[in-house]
Amino acid sequence: MKATAKAHTNIALIKYWGKRNESIILPTNNSLSLTLDGYFTTTTVEYNNSLSKDEFTLDGLAVSGESYKRVSAFLDLIRNMAGKQVYARVESVNDVPTAAGFASSASGFAALAAAGTKAIGLKLNDQELSRLTRQGSGSACRSIYGGFAEWEMGMREDGSDSYAVPIAPADYWDIRVAAVVLSSAQKSVSSRVGMRRTVETSPFFQGWLDSISKDLLEIKQGIQTQDFEKVGEIAEANCLKMHATTLGASPPFTYWHDTTLVVMQKIWEMRLQGTPVYFTIDAGPNVKVLYLPEYEEQVKQTLGSLPGVSDIRLSRPGQGITYL
Ligand code: 2P0
Image 1 (cartoon, rainbow, N blue to C red):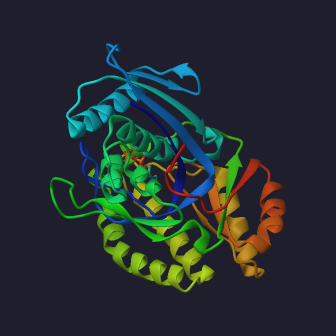
Image 2: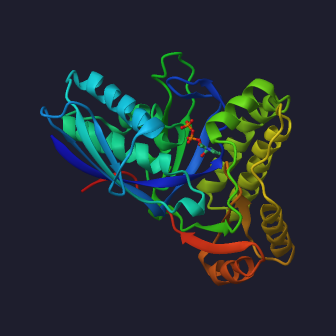
């Protein structure tokens, strides 16, 4: 009744931004991501009849409040699937530096789903595991797979056709991602709240949705032909469209800080000078830079020396779920 699993986080190149069902987490659009080897969560789940409630530690510390409730509610889903009412001890260790601005919920729920189902004796295939993981955190359903993955939004109300599928494995193409960490760490609107406000109030939201299918089609062509510039251009433009929707929300908001814009402008300048680098930004101020291995030094030097940048963390394509 015990299992350990490791999952990596992922960076969306076509963003998930909007839910059509908040309780079972169904998105309003397909999204596409690259799993990263630099950031992961390792989770052990042990079910034990002697426990009177679930226990959850993160990096050795007992977790309570909202995070505990989310984990316990997710374990309920697993228990219902297995038809077993038994509490669990969950030990998670995060190797996702909060400062880098990657959502640890992606690797966290993917590792929890994998370890939690295995420990209780469920044998799920990747599709079933991804569908379950989605209900913990949307972006986590893409972390079941290494390399490039696409979350198919599905059409059904019950979510049975909403899960991620693999597009290309981690060793298919060595695209690198640098997280440019900014020194100012202001608290921003959470992605859940930001998404909801955008869906409910932003007049730009429909435009965002209307643009997705073309972006997806073209980025998949770019991945298939390993056309870095095409992939970078589409990812960057898709990110800018997502962030534009927040400016139209009521009340309006943005995840960008002043240094976010400084980094973006430097990247545009590097491109004008012939260096193929592109950016994407999630629900926070840090900038994630896409580049090919031969430009690693240049990316580190040029962006690392900008005022307001505190660190640069580099990552390669990562693997999907592994069991330890
Ligand atoms: C993404 N983000 O595709 C997008 C881009 C943020 C910006 O998925 O509410 O933690 O748990 O489903 O997955 C962040 O939201 O949200 C996110 P929930 P999640 O990666």
